[in-house]
Image (cartoon, rainbow, N blue to C red; front, side, top):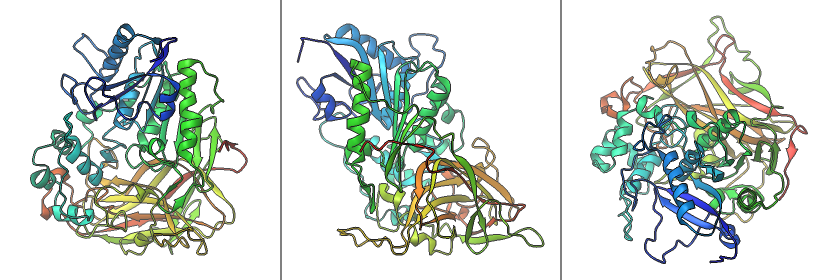
Length: 580
């Protein structure tokens, strides 16, 4: 409205619809936060190709074409380039600078825009970007399907339309997700009984259970290189959907784009998109003692775009990462991520449910010390104790006492800590295992055990007891048949030990003096992930008869050491960012 000066363009590209549609119709909110509306920008929201009122054919996670041979070769990078070019030529009053931001699927489009970017694109913020649907982000983690999240998503996404009337909500018939998915039976029944062909992409995922060319072509990571715009990659430590994509996006820019003018990772104590929608002061009963989302929006995101699109001076961001350290509830600034000053320490499993630093000391005549449990697909371990239908976002800080009391969950813990232990970066898992079946899932959880005299919240409307609370810090599944390759699954030989190694997504957490560190291992995590029949087969077409009990063993001897390796940062070696 102010034509006395020029303004930058702020873009968002989305598959979710940019309505309300029509002349003089605008959304209630424009830009990443209300701060942008007050400051003045030209806002551009775009339905991506083939969605809502945009013409063409929509392709889920449209593959990037590295070597386009003609004008008919399109991907999200070229579509963004063409859009920016059109805007510069047809929209009046711009200053020649463009920014783009987006969360989740729109985060994928923001990341795509950085590749072979238009020269006018000066700043990009991929937030919880989907980088690889089939390895670490929304659909599969280490070969295991995120059942609750993706079934619920497809019941909505496949029916979305630009019409004002919302699609009719799917009727689960119960508030109990555990009951619904268990009674659904084998995975093939999801479509046969419920979706009934309404989601073409669900069928594609069921057809491509292994990491084949269909999956690889939708991995954006290899194409993120030579990035020219400034980049602010944002995510949440408690993002159950695209935590891995956030870390991978930042790392790819850092490794492949030396000419990028600024590349900063921001990680806060947030659920998926929480930095945009709420205060970020708590998740469930776990408090963070600050409005972390407000701080991010006011002190980080808004100044980043103001600086790169308008030339407004800003306070210096860290060279690499601004992360919220849970446990102590403080912002930390790092010149590298993971921090160079961290030391890798293995927390090894041992007998009597012990977890200790260094190698396992257990031994016997055969060198085969182990713990075992019976994993029954008919009674899988739930991922939360409470009754919920859709994926419960608070599960990532949920109390794990209910799981540690089950006979099909192995528990290992340290003595009471006598000093704070700060860990930062990824967590490496090494399990020496065997099973009486031919396939098995291995779910590993890193847990912060509170002292028994830890005070309850005040007020405490839910009646939670924090004394002895077992807070999930990080958990991740691994489908055992992919232990050597996501492309070529291999059965276990019943009773024969095998090695399962994988990496859990990064954390920044301090286990406080007086707390304990706990690791749990289990064979299911339902219905957050789908059930493993424990018979080597194509799970997408498995039958009831394929689901069988099996006895799983986890070994912890000098010859077969199981445990997790964390990166410990010594106190005083990192930089405080106590801007709150």
